[in-house]
Amino acid sequence: EVQLVQSGAEVKKPGESLRISCQGSGYSFTNFWITWVRQMPGKGLEWMGRINPSDSYSNYSPSFQGHVTFSLDRTISTAYLQWSSLKASDSAMYYCARHSRPNSDFDSWGQGTLVTVSS
Amino acid sequence: EIVLTQSPGTLSLSPGERATLSCRASQSVSSNYLAWYQQKPGQAPRLLIYGASSRATGIPDRFTCSGSGTDFALTISRLEPEDFAVYYCQQYLTTPFTFGPGTKVDIK
Image 1 (spheres, rainbow over the protein chains, first blue to last red):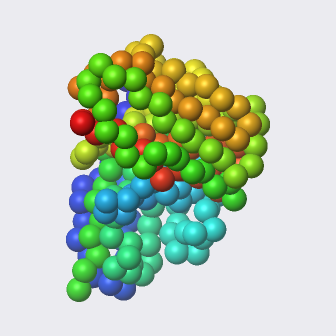
Image 2: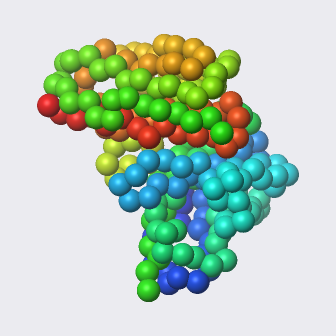
Image 3: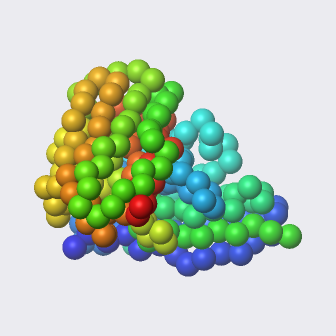
């Protein structure tokens, strides 16, 4: 069974750094791109960008370019989303999802990681 | 960037009724690079439809899609209690991939 398991909820202060994780199982991790999606409280879904686990190539949405970084640890089939300096406006639920093919739909989703940034 | 517009914003219907949700793109989503997702409160989204008309694994046949180019529709033939949720369309033709704002289907 394909599963994406995300790390737990985080509470941080503005200016702090953060890295959240998404561990894949039940499939060959390096064969499927991982995408990241933001959902702010009570709002819709926003595509942040994606990373190719086979070569670490990343696409970022212009809305998120320069503010977040995607990375990987192939040895543990894990993708990461990180911030170097959080803002209150980063408070949201973050989902990872797997592309079924390189330019394709997202066929499996993590359970989400809630990030709260507050002073 | 391809902008997706969904209508209506909210659809209030009773179980057993038919629901028709619309998704319009600002430019052609050729080769039907369009998907639909369902999201229930407190849950992650779930893939319903890909390639504009193909149901994902385990999705019942009461969910059907039609359309091409810039206009797409998701139809739920007879609403079951578990179908009351928010539905998002999404294009994956070009990056940045984009989602529509969603249509909430709630119980009348």
